[in-house]
Amino acid sequence: MPKTEFIRARVDENLKANVEELFNKLGLTMTEAITLFLRQCELNQGLPFEIKIPNKQTKEVIEDAQRGIGLHKFDSLEEMFKELDKD
Image (cartoon, rainbow, N blue to C red; front, top):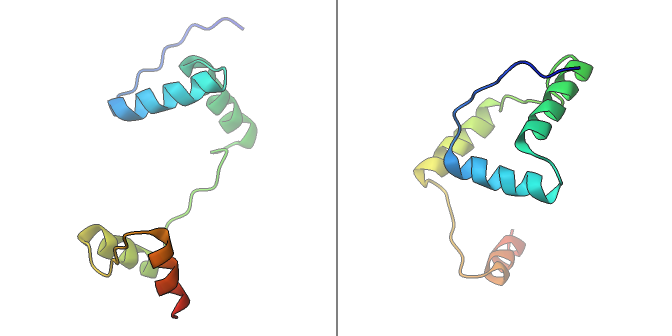
């Protein structure tokens, strides 16, 4: 089937660079990856992955974390695991 349509999208330059590097490792071009995504959408009659809306509690925790509320900082993984083991 001939390719005659264009898709244009603006994305963050870091996201684009990171994803292009990933696709390159997978042996895909950006065009091939987008086509693969669109084919999967067509086959699934929707997105080829589950989308979830966080519940109220999860939203509150995310908002708190974004504001720096309730976060604990550790100097190492060992220190973090010791603190987790206390509970």
